[in-house]
Image (tube, rainbow, N blue to C red; front, top):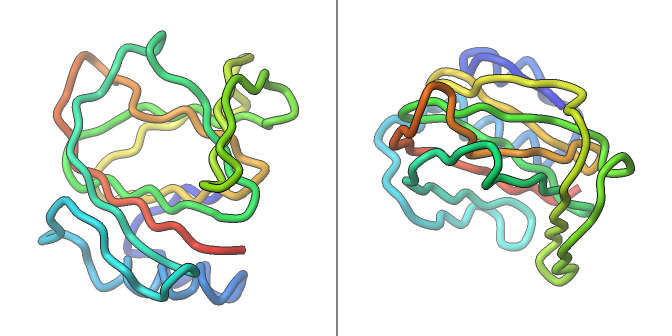
Amino acid sequence: MIFAKNRDALDYLGLNENLDAALRRLSEGLDQLQPGHYDMDGDNVWLNCFDYETLPEEECFYEAHRNFGDIHVMLKGSEKVYIADPKDLDEFHSEPENDFYAYHGSEPMDTLVLTPGTFLVVFPGDAHNIKMRVNGPEQVRKAVFKFKL
């Protein structure tokens, strides 16, 4: 997991070429990004942007991936995020063809609040419980990069 300021995105170059491509795009700014899918490098790197309303914690669940990492970038609003080890959670749904695994489970190893100007990189060992309300329901806009490992 990496949790940092957008202005520091390029400090994390060199871990993976697909992650590097996403970090470079993040460093260029995403302020004008509208909801939709943005292809960057075929099946290796892409970006999705969406609007949604944050949810009560009890309506949220952990998700994890085995072949891809994510970069979550908050563009408007804020959300609480929990991070846990998937091995400590109970899998209740899987879509291997989409590299998506859903979990219920334990206390998080880490908690953070994603706000504009920050980003979160999660790797396969980082189950992430997202979209949670901070102080009540809030309309947010978030961009999520997917990068193949």
